[in-house]
Image (cartoon, rainbow, N blue to C red):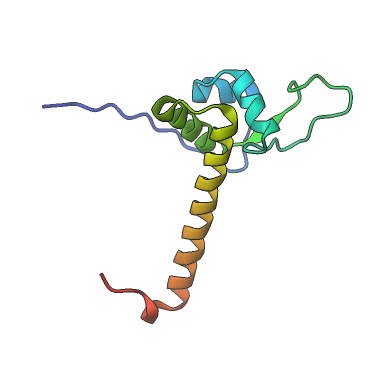
Length: 116
């Protein structure tokens, strides 16, 4: 019998995390997360203040935890660099958005739902 251990965390959408907390939760180095911000795959809640050090004032929404964990899996599975990882993350986000739109439309028009 194989026992699988699963880690779960409750995410509060209103919560904010620092870059250091994202590093801890994702297992990715801070330099890689900074590159993902520079490529537009991650977006800080508060843009960098003028004169502040590069990432010292960045805060991220709790939703970013899902993205950085996805990035971590992509890095492990496919050995992607930051640029490729940012493209993949943006595509995954787009797929999630499209699936949500499809579900909303299926709720509005249940008689048009495709039967399997």
